[in-house]
Image (cartoon, rainbow, N blue to C red; front, side, top):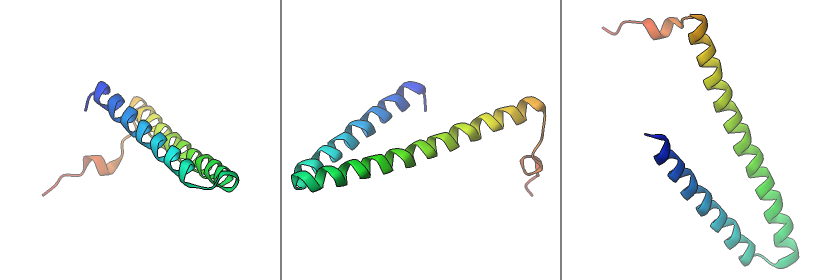
Length: 80
């Protein structure tokens, strides 16, 4: 998958998520709905940020291991 296609998928997911948040905001009663919605948005952003941070850290760790020449024995097992 090339970079352009990933960007388009990310934009579509972001637009759909924004639409869902707006729909929830319009369907819930005014004072309670805002508190509920903003707390759910904050919680979901924390979880998404945590997952993105894990993925970025994992990819950087893999690159550093490749540069150092460290090998993972499971990569070099022969299949029979």
